[in-house]
Image 1 (spheres, rainbow, N blue to C red):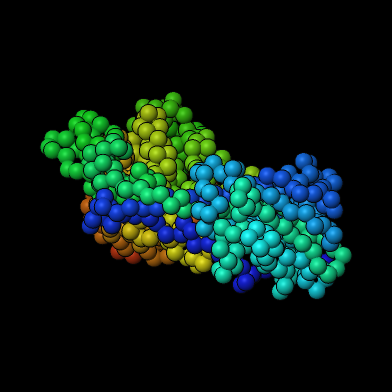
Image 2 (image 1 turned 180 degrees about the vertical axis):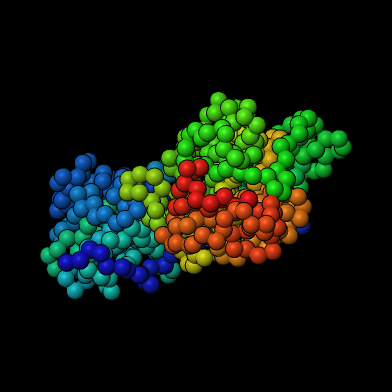
Amino acid sequence: MSRWMPWLTPWIAVLMYGCMPLEVDDSQEPGAQERALAGMEVIDFSSASTLANTDASGKTGGMTVLKANSTRCTVGVYADCYADYIEFSSSYTGYLSFKLSSLTQGAPTPSQITNLQLLTKYQGPAAATSYYKWQLYRFTTASWVDITTSQGRGDWVWTAALTLNLPSTEVASRFVSSDGEIRARLIKGAGTDTAQLDSLRLQVSWDSGSTCTPETDAAFCARLGGTCGQLSGTDNCGQARTVSSCGVCQSPATCGGGGTPNVCGQGSTCTRASFPKGTTWMWDLENSTIPTNLNAQVYVVDLFGTSSAKIQEYKNAGKKVVCYFSAGTYENWRGDANQFPQDTYCSPGENCAQSIHILGDWCESGGDCEWWLDHRKPAVRTVMEARMQLARDKGCDAVEPDNVDGYAHDSSISCTDQACWGLTASDQLTYNRWLADTAHAKCLGIALKNNIDQVAQLAASFDFAINEECQKYNECGDYKTYFTSQNKAVFNAEYMKDAGGESTSWTSCTGTQATCACGESGFAQGDMRTLVFTTSSVRYNNISITCW
């Protein structure tokens, strides 16, 4: 039997909770409104009514495997973790018990429960071979209610993340006992083959019935310590909120003065490094040390992989140093990776190891992986502000925040499940301008990396540009209009063989022609400085052509 069949499940309803950004309408304060105190939490089962007719042999911890929600074999290429499953035989009649007392976010009563959803990871035989179904127990009628069945499913199809909804005709509170117990089970019908689960959890939603009066914009700003500029955070009712302006600073104070975003203060006296048109550069994100005598005025290096001493060595040799970090993705190998809450890169209820937010297809099994971030969340900005402070402390002259076009990725996802965020072009502009303002407040220059579709709107906020492959795709025109014409440097990288394996011949780009631009017309010498790498590896000793 095959365990590699692709599978779609049109009969499974999907959650939309958390899909859309929650923002306050800037045209009115919500002070006169009242919000119900609602909550939602995923919990593990507290006990099994029986262990009979379940096979946990070879599975460390027996039934507790179902609580582990294991993902160790699902990073990158699919792997079948058979040894991690619990098998339920056709004669299993027990159930799993969930307790409201397990909730950590609140203490709702049974009558306040508004929705129940089973979250499961599973595989098993086709219905024709062995029929089975998931059920929840309705306490008010002492009967089990079908949630869904295996009807219409393929044979041995691994399902990484199912959300099983209570039928819309049911009332969730009827499935909770007076002492807060909820029961779920998987039962077998025809056939002798087993049903196999890797995880079975319960998502509980509730409304406490009490109300909360949201604070005013002024109180929100004061509580979060903001005195100027747009400020986002969580209000006193636990709701995401954005205030368009917490105030205007009186001259000579500026917003973010002294390096603290959203706070009025006297900016520290500093002169940011300049990056005028015609500046030459070298881009190396893979070597921790490169020669100091390379023919380049600017060295672009990795923030985490380059020491303060090495940065100072480059500066002593007369180089300006730009430090790279990813501002739009979560990289699980970085030293500050534990500072990102999981919901900034993986939606609640989603299998993170197979998330739609994974960047490309390159995740290594059991190793490095990268996810797009929901950069609207305040926690993301906290980490990025700390990264820019690290760049300042290390002596970097400027920063190169990468992956600042996540909205274009998110818009390509069909938002028909709970994993989608709905990032917009406006969200991206707001975030990118915040990055620029924060860098400038720390006396750092900043490059606009790629995001070609928003060059016109963002160029005024950035000091220079770094682009990959705009010449290959004939997309460099806006850089000439909005950067070179403003005497701002444009650094371009092209690849003879890019990360996707596609090859391009750049033999006609010698770097000596009066109007050398490696294929893009309309550029004079010095308008754009291009490095042509032999492969997609970004390091100084992988360069084939320098087009000055």
